Amino acid sequence: MKKSLLWLFIISIIALFLLTGCKAEIPKEIIEEEAEENVTEEPEEEAAVEEENIEVETIANDKIVFVSNRDGNEEIYIMNIDGSEQIKLTDNSADDFLPCFSFDGSKIAFTSERNRNWEIYMMNIDGSEQTKLTDTDIQANNIEPSFSPDGNKIAFISDHNGNWEIYIMNVGALGKSNLTNNTASDSSPCFAPDGSKIVFYSDRDNWETHNREIYIMDVNGSKQTRLTNNPAGDWIPSFSPDGTQITFTSNRDGNEEIYIMNVDGSGQTNLTDNQANDMGPCFSRDGSKIAFSSNRDGNWEIYIMDIDGSKQIRLTDNPAVDGHPVFSP
Ligand SMILES: [Ca+2]
Ligand SMILES: [Ca+2]
Ligand SMILES: [Ca+2]
Ligand SMILES: [Ca+2]
Image (tube, rainbow, N blue to C red; front, top):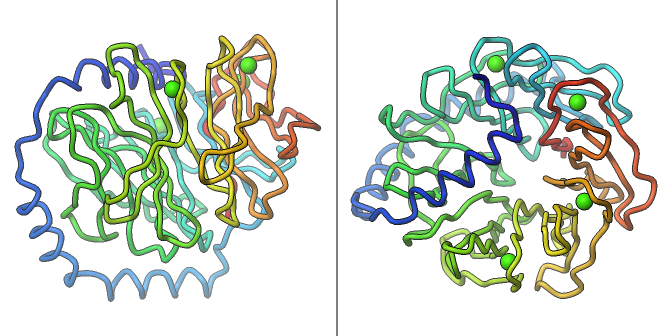
């Protein structure tokens, strides 16, 4: 049976529970040494590729990437911000999901299970040059990539130590460093626009009751600070372009809704208010809009709204699961 996006969410949740009891086994020092060894190997080649792409004008402007299983399995799509010109970027029988733009709009990192386990890949915005960036053993997974603003690093999560932890790697290098290291699940990292912080969610406060909270930390993993504090699930955070606000998902009113808060956790306000599930918000480049997914019309579709919650407009319209919208920078 093929996984829908909803299944991915559900499977992730189940996986988080199943895996949180296990202990990390690879010493952090060894991982960091590997990361440093690999740093010097390929950055020149990567920089050359970036320059080539800029010359042939493959920068995304006013686009949204998203995931849909409308062709029978999950693929990455790109469309205009009014929902027009929906173009498929990946095309294979495996699931491709969780896309993320580089801050210069030239690359899309994503997760794919085309190699049996979930690994992180990168491609140009027209779908060309799909390259695998991580390569773990078949029993483990690397998912949820988030580019650093300079494009040189990607934060992501891996379960290779037995539970989901946040890691950071240099693009083009195989090594990675832990940013979190505990028995709970830490997920959904997202870089601040100035590159100094990463926002994420964790169930470290009470994983038995599945109490996810939004946390923020420095990019070296220090100063991990909780921003939400309630018995409900608070998850899938994303920074505003100016770094002053965070939009996220919470089910504190009984179903999933989109919320916005200041970067210190103050002023938590819900932007959606209905009986359906509204999830996975992302700010537009100018900070005036938020894209998200909702099943309010009977199946998962992508919507856009102003940041005060007004003008909620549907962008996709088909019986398949459409989700995980991400604005181009
Ligand atoms: Ca696919
Ligand atoms: Ca909570
Ligand atoms: Ca709702
Ligand atoms: Ca749909």
